Image (cartoon, rainbow over all chains, first blue to last red):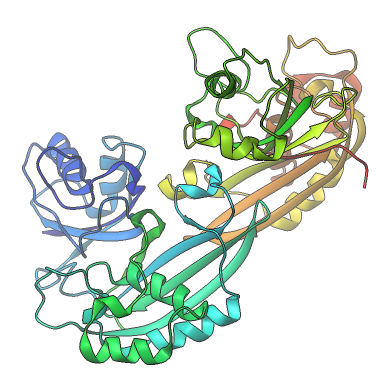
Length: 250
Length: 250
C-alpha cells in the first residue's frame, strides 16, 4: 500500500529535508521513526526537498509498505517517536500512480518579513528582519510583475539541473499585520512548481522592485536573458515556509 | 545614573527571570553581558519576575551605574553580547525615584492558545494547544466576569507572600485569527498588577466559564472565599508573554 503523510516541521535545527551524512535532516528523522515503529527500512519521497532552515506547515511524502497500521493512524503512531519540531498532521492511502512530487499540481510557499531596527526574538525564528520596507501597495503592485508564466531561470540558484526553467506562478498574495507593534509582512506565492531558491530570490526582487531599487525593465531583461545579476538578493532560509501542496486543480 | 532597559526574550530555554543556582536565567544572562561590557557587577531590577518558560516582548529593568555609554546606546552595546533569544530593544535614563517594579502603573500579558488535534510545531513554541475551544463570543462574555477590582487570592499560587491579593484588571481582550488553518486565540489581560500564576489561572478559568464547565456563581464564591479549588486549571507557562509595562496613566 502507498501511504501518504502530511508533515509540519520547524526547520531551524535541521540540515534540510534530504538525507545526508553528518547532519540531521527531516527525511532521516521520519525514516528513523518508521524504522523504530515497524522494524523496516522504509524510504520516503517528499513533494520536494526543503533547504536547511526552511520550515513546513504542509509538506507531503509517501512510501510503500505492508503494515497493520492504517494510514489515518500514522500521526498517532509516529508522533510519539518524533522530536517536537516534527509532527505528522495527517495520513491517507493513495494508489501506486500517485507520487507526492510528480503528482503535485500547485504549491504555496510563504515568505515572512518583519520591519525592526533590532531583532525581535518572538518573531525572528520564522521570519527575517529588514530595516525598512516598502508600503503594502507598492509590494502588491510589484508582485503582479512576478506572477504569470515565465522562464524563471534567473531566479534559480546556479548549478541545479532541471529540464525546463519555465514555471507558472498563479498568485502572489501580500499581507501585512502588526505584531508587538512591528510590521509583519507575509508573501504567499502559489505556483505549479518552483526552482531551487526561487521564492527566496523572488522575495529579494520584490523588495527591490517595490522599493524602487530595480525596475520592471530590468526584470523583463532578467526573464529574457536568465541573468541572475539583474535580480535582488536571495533572502535567508528561515523566513521561508512550505505552506501546502495541492494534488487536484480546484 | 539610573538606566532603564526594555527587553524582549524567548523564555523557552530559561529558568525564568530571577537568578538562581544551577540554572540559566534571563537576569543572569543580562548581568553577565553588563559585566562583559563594563567590567562591573551591576544588579538589575525587573518590573516583575517571569516564570520559567514565560516569554516577554516588553519586560523592563533598571540599574544604577556611572558609564560612558548613554542609555540609548545600550541596545547596540549589549545585544552583541547576548544570545539571540534575548534582545534589549530600548534604553533610556530615569531619575532615582523611578523603580521598574514599584513605579509600574499597568501591565499587559498575553496568553495564546491554539485549537488542534495534534501539536503544530510552527505555533507550539509560544502557544498552548487545546483540543477544542469555546466560541470567541462565549470567551468574551466570560472575560467580563474576570475584569474589575477583586480579591484574586484564589487565582494565586499558594505560598506566595504578598500584602494584599486585591488587584484591578482593567481589560481582558480576546482575539481570534486563523493560522495554518487552525484557530489561534489570544487573551490580552491588562491590570495594575498580577499575583503569581494569576494570568495562567485566569486563562484556565476563562476556558471553563466559556465552555460551561464552571459557573459565574462558583467564580463569585472563589472571589469571596479565596478557594483555589473552585477555579479552572493553571495553564502552562509557554503560552504566556509579558507584552508591556506602562509607567504613566494614559
